[in-house]
Image (cartoon, rainbow, N blue to C red):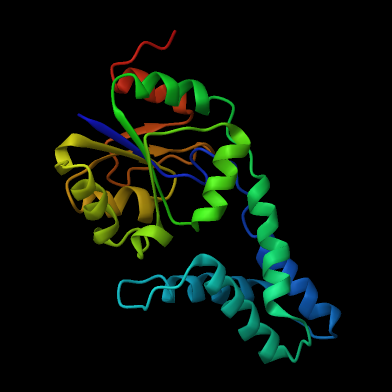
Length: 224
């Protein structure tokens, strides 16, 4: 093994799921509309998937976010600026914190391996969060600079090609089953599922960990 690639959000940095969608629901309800929350959240997620698939023209996450908010505002007759509301909500992404073990683990792994980040996110968001938390890796790849989203095979192939790596040279670490486990596995890349909530289950991952320090013995690196 020559390289370890980490997903970013949910793996290296903490996330709060569903907060933005519920903020938009609140804006719609303030306009006097009733909203079926479960149906809204399902459509909210579906819209994202429909605009990040392999057959879609590439849009940044910010562009998708604005477009999605505008669609719901138009549907419910909400007279608000979707772009302003999107940027207000996205500002929270810049304040995300790293999990406490991240820098120690990355520093140890970088002494032995090429360490990269491969994340579905916009460049400025990831750059800001990394700087805020003092997180440093050898190379950073985002959906914005690769112009595609995980689990699109091109996302992983482009990272391999850029570093002259073969699938067997790489370990991919992430929290998303579809993006970080199934995507790389299709190319023969070994995977580590970080199951921070201890949900359990066999999804085809090669290893399961609950904390990034558990990765060190897998990679033959001294924990101490």
